Image 1 (cartoon, rainbow, N blue to C red):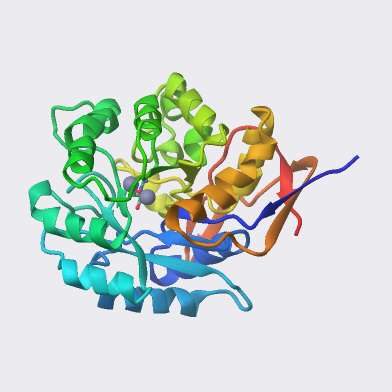
Image 2: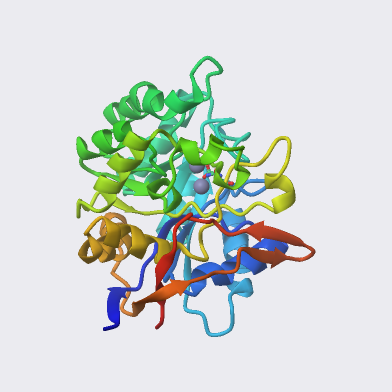
Amino acid sequence: MTQKLTLKRPDDWHLHLRDGAMLKAVLPETTRHFGRAIIMPNLVPPVVTSAQALAYRDRILAALPEGSEFTPLMTLYLTEQSDPDDIAAAYASGLISAVKLYPAGATTNSASGVSDFDKVRPALEKMAEIGLPLCLHGEVTDAEVDIFDREAVFIDRVLDPIRRATPGLKTVMEHITTKDGVDYAKSQDNLGATITTHHLVINRNHILVGGIKPHYYCLPVAKRETHRVALLEAATSGDTRFFLGTDSAPHTDLLKENACGCAGCFTATNTMSILAEVFEKAGALDRLEGFTSLHGPAFYGLPVNDTTLTLTKGAPVTYPSKIEVGAETVTVFDPGFPLHWTVTA
Ligand SMILES: NC(=O)N[C@@H](CC(=O)O)C(=O)O
Ligand SMILES: [Zn+2]
Ligand SMILES: [Zn+2]
């Protein structure tokens, strides 16, 4: 008997589309399955002003495959010089859905991020006042903090103080990777947490055992198995504070398979198949729709998509292992187990 699963069309609440040839190459991988996505602003140079966000949205819309109804939800990159009034105007006009805060130096293209959190206080207060969500890359960057502890330390030293200082601020903990992140999210109201596909699949052994695997390296770096299990429990729990943000983050193979390899896993292509497999194994297939299609819109105050996506279970399916970007390639995330669910409608 073939098994079918029909979901409200999913959204991706954390996505990197890049620009130029890369944008053109990766965009169809997302628009094939997803209705909307929160578009990360960490371009070079970053998308800081409303004028830059408007221009970037136009470039995304121009790159959409024929007939696509995909909606990019734009964000602004918060800097210590960001103008609270420009941010508010961008939100009032419907151009942006969130503001993204990168601690300076925490991840790919975060050099223009925030070092002194007091300097962005006026912007955060304005955002709380108008109901504009803040998305956070939650890692400290202090050289003395171990990379595996950077998320937990961020929660104590940065996130919790921001929450206390700006109580009305709607906040998204992006790509949580620890039980500490799960526990903190559960202790809060007015706070959401995105979980990536890959952090539900890999732990740090996948990166390091039997040779270094650059395509499993991303930030925040995958942690030990107990943390992966906590993420899986959160994602499959039905708790509306947790929703999908793939953090699909393409880098060319040249830059990944490198003595100083870039951080990011590219999961747009096979995310829905992987998630169906993971949720089924967890006995939670009935909760997949909440995670991919319902909890995110509820947090962002948007309607659920009115179209659907159907997955069908059958013999193992394969995906291209790489997609082409001009003369270069981007490797598609390999979950390391067979995928039986495929999007059929
Ligand atoms: N997640 C990553 O490892 N990389 C992201 C940046 C980010 O989301 O932190 C990227 O832009 O490549
Ligand atoms: Zn990040
Ligand atoms: Zn990201």
